Length: 173
Ligand SMILES: Cc1cc2nc3c(=O)[nH]c(=O)nc-3n(C[C@H](O)[C@H](O)[C@H](O)COP(=O)(O)O)c2cc1C
Image (tube, rainbow, N blue to C red; front, side):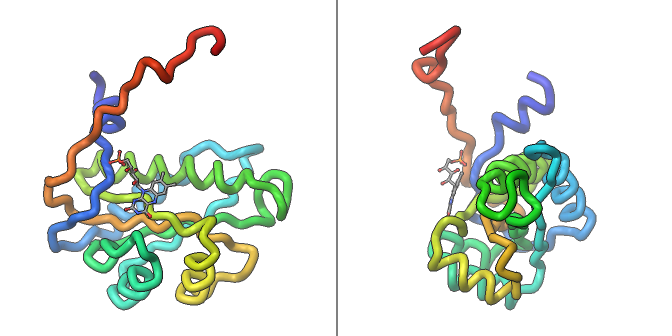
């Protein structure tokens, strides 16, 4: 297997981290990988908020019920969409797909650097969107999709083998 396929197959959600910082260079290259993703009509409606401030990490962990690991993470990246900049305009849904592609690229970049991360959901839960908007001071046309805590993995988490030939259909259903 080549290195790219190994990274894809080894990616796993990492929710337990060792203490230690994630460098600015690492965070920049991770976000650069996010911005290499495809987007509908090449609109690139994404915004990436890099969070290294411990107070902010704690505040986000407090309002996101399934992102408690953010408190212990070295950093986190919040991926959000600009509803006005997406293909189809304000009421379209392309931003979700565009930002999701960026998130997967981010998770793969993290894995390739020997770090660990997990996609934690904000959108479409209204009770998570509003507190996150307030903490980050986001304007209303910016919709937070997910918070990705990143840290040094403890090694407890392992990739799952999800290959299921029954879910593969050749030349029709
Ligand atoms: C849309 C989406 C939302 C998710 N939300 C959360 C979350 O809020 N908290 C969490 O710990 N994991 C979350 N996950 C991670 C999934 O639980 C994880 O990807 C799944 O269990 C498969 O495990 P793996 O990533 O190790 O392959 C989310 C994943 C996706 C794609």
